[in-house]
Length: 443
Image (cartoon, rainbow, N blue to C red; front, side):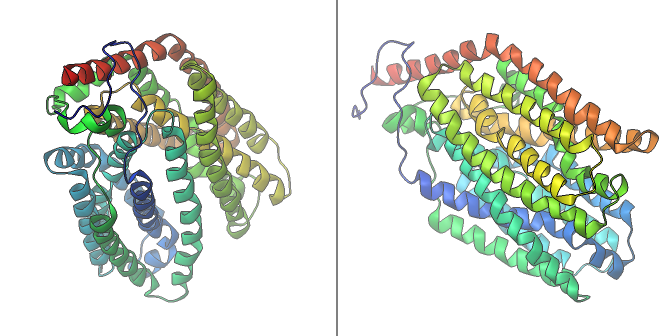
């Protein structure tokens, strides 16, 4: 038996941090996949005016494309994680990008809305599994104190690179068939990315960052559906799911430009300027926030993460209040505050993902992120979008923003206070589980 890793017999001892071989190469590869996938995701919305002109569509069709593209994640997210468990995550990512690329190319040949809707919905289902699988790979590649930085870099770098893809895609609208070339080009990139995954991605063992060199020897039951459902019995996990349903900041991406056009009087081209500072702010928030969380981990206890997560919600609410509740004639004012909203929103991934990773058994992390990102986030997005649209017509977007971006975010911060009671205990339970498994293997 390989005993290169020294294991404490004390089940309460925290596992020693492990540097997994190839983790930065894996992270770089996943960033590349995420950027290409994000480019495809923004293709329909960016080029929709050209698509609408070509196929005779309207805003209703855009809404249907967007909504079905989200809702399809509910069945397809769990499917891709199931497939990864039955094969490998490397193969799941490869097949996902290959199928997604083929469907994107096929979308470029669509001659009517029904065919485009079917192809784009299936394409969204093909790539949806990337997010939970990616988060699980990060958890297996980086130890608990490094995950904040890794997650921050994944989301931050992906966001800033994706922000440059949008204007490039927009240039395709200069000629009538440009949107078709957009689908063909992105589809080809997705297929190429899939083969790059085969060449560059090194599959980490489940729990490699937790178990070290013993990871391939640790025995655990293959995850089942009831195990995924049982995650809801973990108090920290349940609180984080509830918090996702209170995360009103999801609304700003949907109605932000609409608010500036209809209630602040800017034309679309001017209002769209705020997207750039928002993207830059989000990049700074995710990357900077991840490094801050790692620093807090070295100097504080588990509850330092909780305090940071609460602070992110409060800061967003404060910035959103000044950004949306005052009528100012200058777009520079809104650009500055949109940048700050992007920054404060970007603080979340680098802390909420590591919190979740640290309270789930290694073999159930992908399933946990399916629930968090492809079920609860979809429910929250759909609910906020529908309710905001109805209330905005009855009152105003400014009033809706006050209650959802400001008041509800403060409620969310207060709700997260429950973690002070649950998180240290739940995190210790997983540390004990990992230590016990290592001790059992060593003996």
